[in-house]
Length: 137
Image (cartoon, rainbow, N blue to C red; front, side, top):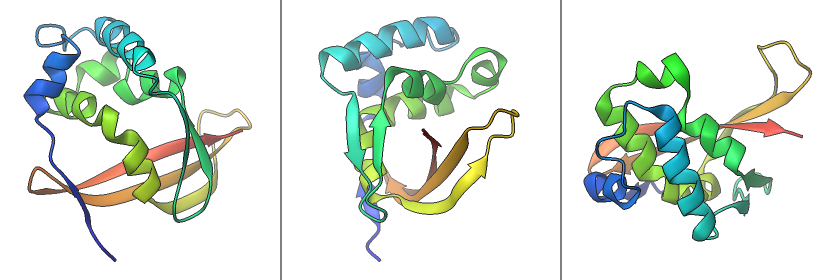
């Protein structure tokens, strides 16, 4: 299996969203990122190579990716920057990821089910593991 490797200038990606001084405010982060991605025609379906599953990248999913409230505030500054920096790479990450679990019950109690995808990759020379949670509807 080939390892997917990519390089991202993290600081430049954060700057491209004008977020250098806003990383502690998850609402400001979402208000900056979501409209910019919309202008770039970022949202839409991506087909996972391993399963053939069509995965919709939507605004709600990006909000979830960026986190909210205390969960977002607890992240280190570097993790916040990394989440923002890889957003534009999500389509490629989704294509390359492998299914690790399927039809997992929602632990919040509603009837929705999830598929979990994982990509073991190299980001700027470091080995990382990216997990993508996909709500199945």
